[in-house]
Each structure stands twice: as structure tokens, then as C-alpha cells.
Image (cartoon, rainbow, N blue to C red; front, side):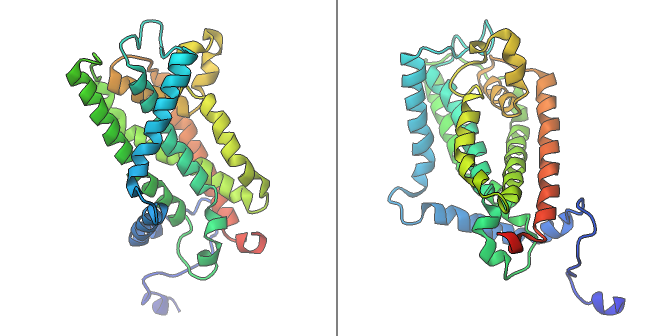
Length: 291
């Protein structure tokens, strides 16, 4: 029997452990991930007049609204530390937080419907189910890259025109790690929700509302100094907060960076992703019976 099995490239066996993530098999299906990424990106802008330009228009309009509403009208501080951010134009400040949050929230929202949206194909064809949330994360990464290029372009124009006097810090080398962390964290939360929504559909209804509340609990539209000092630790244990603060500090060379809270954020990210993958492995065996 074993000799017959060796003739096959892939042998499908039941999982014996919740920690059996089959990472080698997922890597083997990297072409399928590429196809899913292409499918998701094309279908998102299919039959739209402006197409991928929406990836630029949406954060741009959001930044304009934040600048007017929170900057000009509410006059909320954009300082992350008492001596920081005085030279940071509000437009750049809000855009930096917006593009980070847009990637995170979009990936969580899309990944949370993994089983529901893909029940048809998952019930007919075998492939590692984790391929789907991974492809969503990479598909949204294309949009994030477009937005990041727009942010850098506006940043350079402001520097050249003298509108902003900023100096990027050496923490820019952390940018790939920040992007990786956003991918892992958003995937972790998304697949946790997707695993739970196979039995409790109410959670799917709460995802959008919960993400809105989470956004206001993260210093996207205001600086960290708006929060009383004794409560700042509560804001900083939010795993998204150190990502946003470090992103701004890297580009602006001023702001708030704490290695302690950044490492705590990484520990929480890894823990959430592992928990999500364990739940995902458990639910994928029986989700067709409950969805």
C-alpha cells in the first residue's frame, strides 16, 4: 500500500492534530494563491468606471474628511508625544493612519467571510482551506501598495514645496515587518471570526460595527496625547496602535515609539494568528455540515 501511495504527489489524509497546519502543502499550492489573488483583485474593480483608481480615491477622500472634521473643526491634537508632531501637516498625519487601518480592516472584513463566501468551491474541490485567507491578505496588499505609493508621492511633494519639514527616521527599515505584522494580525482576527460565524451568523453582522469602534480606539484620527497619560497603556496594548505609531514615526522622524509595546504587539499578533489557525483547522472539518 505504501509503495502505491509514493506514486502520488499529494496524499490527502485526515488531520491528527489541530497544530498540523500543513505549511508545505500550502506552499505547494502557491499557484492557486496567485490565481485567487488575481481573481479577487479583478472582481473587486470589475464593471467600475474608475477601476483601481478607487484604491487611491477612497483613502484620499477619507483623509480629506478627517483633516476637515477632526483637524479643522474639532481641532484634535495630532501629537503622539508632548514635543512631537508640531511640524507634521495634518493631511499627512491622517493619511498615514488611514492607509494602515484600511488594509487591516478590509482584510479582517473579507477574511471573516471565508467559509460563507467560498462554501461552493470548498464543498466540491480539495485544496488547503488556508489558501483562501492568505490570498485575501495578498490581494489587499496590492491595494495597500498603491496607497503607499500615493502617500510617498504626496510626502515628497510636500517636502520639495516646503509645505512640510520632516526627516524620515532609520525606523523605515521596520516597514516590511510592519506590513507583515498587519497581514498576520488581520488574518488572525479574520479567520477567528470566520471559524465562529459558521455556527453563529450574528458575528458576521457585528464585524463592520466592531471595526468602526476599533478604529476610534486606535489613534488614527488623533494623536496619542489626546488620551490621558494614565490610560495610554490601555491604548498601547491594542495591537494595531504600535503598528500605526511606528509607521508614522518611521516616515516623519517624530512621534512615539516604544520597543516594549511594539514587541508586546508582535506577541499578541503571533498568538492571535496561532489561535485563529487552530480554530480554522478544527472548523474546516465539519463546516459544510453547519454552514
